[in-house]
Image 1 (cartoon, rainbow, N blue to C red):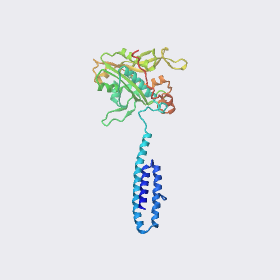
Image 2: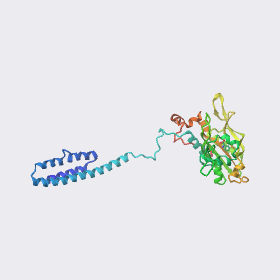
Image 3: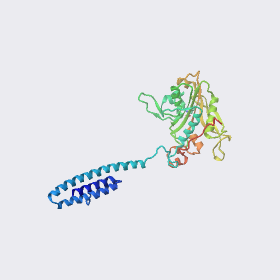
Image 4: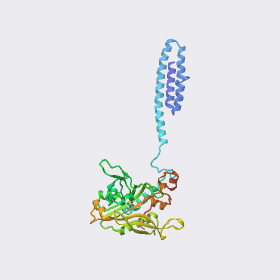
Length: 359
Ligand code: PHE
């Protein structure tokens, strides 16, 4: 009898060790210690035995049952671990692979346009500078030669903010020009930066949104003059719009922080109510610029008898609308998925607007 029980034990332990997966193991468990399992049957038979034989067989059966249960638990742990590893391996995602180009995500036209602008100016040796959208009144106005009570402040439809803890007057920046101030205060000439970013004015209609984007340009050194400004903007606008003979017109204008100041128009045609950029005799205003005012240089700690340079500022939505034929400014910020799918860019659509400096 006991020999037969030991054989049974070895067979069960072997079956447990040989179970290939959790369901096979469960099958073995049912066949061994389930209601009609082999061990269970043996236990039931104890009742028909004589007292001595029953005690011996009962003890042995209990030991075997414990062994079998322990073996099942161990095998279960091992199989579960293996199953988890297999699942992890099967579900592994290679995050280094680019997502499928037909995926849902699109690059917003503003992001794409900033990329394009940056690429062109980077080739000309500009670096990208940044400043905060919550700006001091000093950086946004005073340092730019717009003192308190200056009428130019009214043109900016400023969002005024409560003063900082130390009493500093603050605004949402109304243009990217305060980045000029920050750059001049924090670095020494020669300076050659662009500063793209968000700007804010309290205005809302077909052509104005309370938040919009500008890109600022600033060049400061000992020799830069208005001819360089003209050459730089001509190169940029032709590369950006990809029109080789795009004409530029500089009109005298006024900004408190530049002297002389100019507004720049680019050539266009409005024939048949259709706007087309190029050398067609008509003009479209596109940006403001000028030579940095000596007062601004001095307020930013730069010796205006030694250094000079130019600055420009332009609206990013405006040039994006012109380049990509987007008719309404407000749609940029509606977060309408249909609009984004239509006007957005694939992330694989890297700008390649080189100046062709090697041509
Ligand atoms: N900051 C001006 C604006 O927002 C643009 C500008 C920048 C003009 C730099 C001249 C020089 O209208």
